[in-house]
Length: 240
Image 1: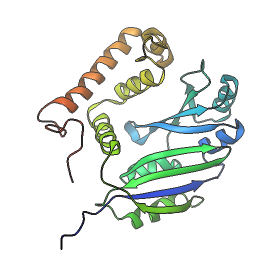
Image 2: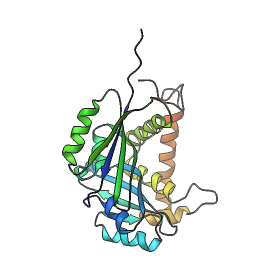
Image 3: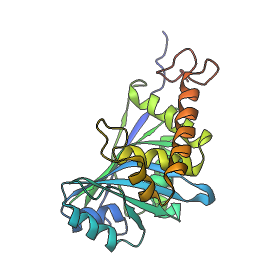
C-alpha cells in the first residue's frame, strides 16, 4: 500500500514578553502589529516591516519613537502606518531565528500585548529540533500548537518569491521594492510618487528609479525565464 507524502508541520507559539517590540508596541498603542516583510541585509542584520493596524498616526509615531530599534515610519498618513525595525542582533528576533532555522513564517502579530507566531517547517526538517532551537533562543515563548499542513497553496509560491528576493536582489534593491510597495507606489492612483518614496528612503528620485527597475527586472526574469526554478510551472513551486 503506497504511503502518503510527508507533510509540512505548522507550529504556533504565543509571545507576551515585553522584550519584543511588536508586543510592547501593540500594548502601548492598543492596536495590532503585524509583520509584513522580513528582509535580510549584509552583516547579519534584518529589516522588519510591521504594519500597525487600528491606531492613529499619532499613536504610530509614539510607538516608533518609544522603540530605539525603530528606523523610520514608512506611512504616517493613513490609519495603518508601517514601522521599520532594524534588527542588528538576529538572536533577539523570533522571525530571524525562524528564518535561520529554514522555517517559513506564515503569520506573526500581536494585539494588546498578546502575540502569536505561526511558522511552517518543511518535511526535510525535524520539526522537534526546530521547536527546541526556537525555545532555546526565546525561552519566554510558549508552543501552543503543532499540526500537519497540506503541501499546496500560495504559501509555496511566496516561499519561492522570497528566495528569489534574497538570492538575486541587493539589500538596497529589496528595501526599495518593499518600501515602494508598502507606501502604495504601485496603487492606481498612486498613494505616493516616486519622489516621495525616494525622500522616505533618503535617496534621489533617479537612484530610486534605478534600484526599482533593477529589482523588478530581476524578480520577473527569475519567475518567467524558462530556465528559472519556476520554469515550466511559473506560478507554482516544484515538488520536493
